[in-house]
Amino acid sequence: MNKKDLSEIKRQLKPENERLILKGIQEAYGKYRDEEAHLLFTRLIDPETLSTEEEDLYFEIFRKSLSGTPGKNLMEYTFDPMDPQAVELQKTLFDYRNGTLLEPEVFDRYASELIEKGNYRNSVYVTVGIFEYAAPNLNANREELEGNTTYRFMITAISEARLTDIGLFYSTKDNCVSRKVNEEMQIIPSPLDAFLYPSFSERAADVNHFLYHSKTAKKPNIDLIEQFFHIPFQSTAPEQADGFAQVIADVFPQGLDVKTAIQFHRNVSDFIQEGTEEDAVVKVDKARVHDLLDASGAMAENMEHFDSAYTRILEDQELAAVNLVEKGKVSLKSPAITVSIKDDALDQVQTRVIDGKSCLVIEITDELKISNLPGTLIEPEPKKEVHVISPETDTPKDNSDHGDFFQS
Image 1 (cartoon, rainbow, N blue to C red):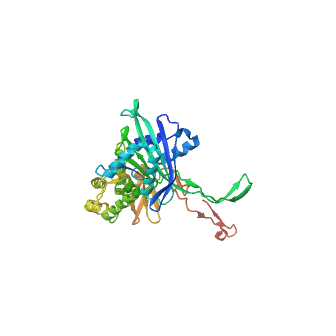
Image 2 (cartoon, rainbow, N blue to C red):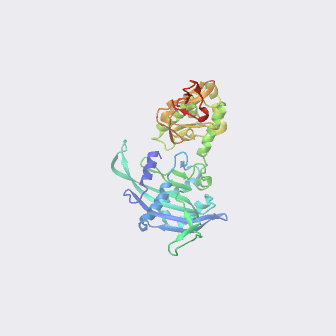
Image 3 (cartoon, helix red, strand yellow):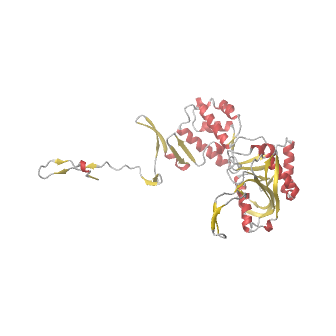
C-alpha cells in the first residue's frame, strides 16, 4: 500500500462523501480482568441515525486510525500462508469486512478476543467501521477514467477510556460553584492501536496484507501483533534507529566525519524518494546500506568491518530507510550545542580548522534570528573613549569616572 493509496483512503473518510458508503458501526466498551475480557457495553449503530456531530466524532477516530508515518507507527504486515492460525484469521477478517461483523454475537466475540489478546489492562473502547469505496479507475498519470472498482474494507480502532477530569465547575442551574465528582469515562479519539483490512493496492483490495497503526512508534502492541495476528514482531522504529547508530559507532570508532554523514543523509533521502511511488515503506538490507555508505565517501578500511558489525548488532534484518536519517534535516549535536540544518541548506555547511581548533562553519545568506529576535553576525565597532581638554591647561582631563562615553 503506497503513500498515494494511503492518502486516497484517508481523504475518503468523511461524512457526506458520495464515493464512500459506511455500512455500519459496531462499538464496545470493556477491559481485561481476571485473565479474560469483560464487555460492559456493545452496540450496533445504523449510520443513518447519527447526527452530524456524532458522525464527525466517529470519522475522527477512523481518520486517526490511519495517521502516522509509514515505517514508524504505520506498518504493513503480511499474513503468513504457512501458519494455519494466520490463514484462519485472514479468512475470518475477509468475512467480517463483507458484513458478518455487523451481527451482534459475532462482534462480541471479536471485541472480546481483541481485548484479551491485546492484553489491555485499562478500560478500552473498540470501534469498527465497515465501508465500501467506489475507487475510480485511473490512468498512468492518475487521471480519472470511466468506471470504478468497489473496495470493501474495515477499520478497527482500540482507544483508551479514562475518567473525566474532576475539579470545580459552575452550575448555571444552581448559580454556584461546586466540586465535580463522577465516574464518566472519556473516549480518547487517538487510538492506542488500529488496523485497516484489507490493504488498498493497485486500485483494489489486497487481502493478503493489513495496515497496523500504533499511537506511538516506541510502543506498538506486541501482544496484539503476535497473539491476535500470529505475526512475529519486528523491531520498532526507535530500535532500528538505535541499532543502526550502534553499527556506525562500532565501524567508525571516531564517528562519521561531517562531509560523509551529510552525503549519506542525501543518498538515503534520494533512495527513499525514488522508491516512494512503489512502496509505502522503502526498506534497505545490509548490502544496500553498505553501498549507500560507500557511495557517501566512508573510509574503505572502516567499511571492512561493516558486514560483521551489522550482522552482530542488527541480525541482518531489513530496516525502514526512514529510520536511518532524520526527515528533511541534519542535526549536529554536542553536549552544549545543537545545530539543525534543512536539506536545502546543506551546501552552506563546512568544517575548518581555525587557530588549531576544529570548527563548523555555516554560511548565513538569509535573515537571522537569535532566540527568536532579529539578529546579525556583524559585530559593532568598539566604542571609543572621549577625553575633554581643559582650555586653561590644554591638558587632557580624564572623565572616565563620570562615564562620559560616546559612540564615534
